[in-house]
Image (tube, rainbow, N blue to C red; front, side):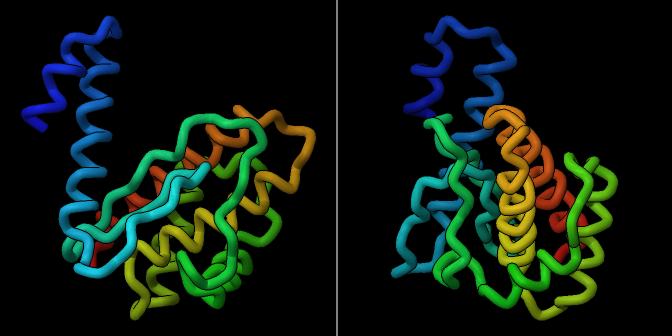
Length: 165
């Protein structure tokens, strides 16, 4: 943080953007520093992604916009496939976008239904399922799809933080 802060401070952006960048960097540094030994780093993803931080969780910002939105593969490597299937069942065919209060309610219900699942896996299963629903609607432009995913993911993570382990 001490080495990165002067570089951000010297930038030409407004103060609120500099603060947001320092918060993003701090979240990612904390997630990387607390990752279990031997765990490979997360690949760059197009969506917000929950990461375990000790007994709680944080989230990583999506990679920069790079064309067509790619959802995380539901191959069991990033999150258990059965959990993604349960998340998809819970969300059903949502009316898009899912508002914050509904995202919160879904996250709380999902945590109650799956008490043994890690909070980061719960969040990522919901994010993966929602991503599939959002990208299925080809009439919505990419930037709006990304915004919906960002808002949904942030709300899910915040809710799961308050539910606790």
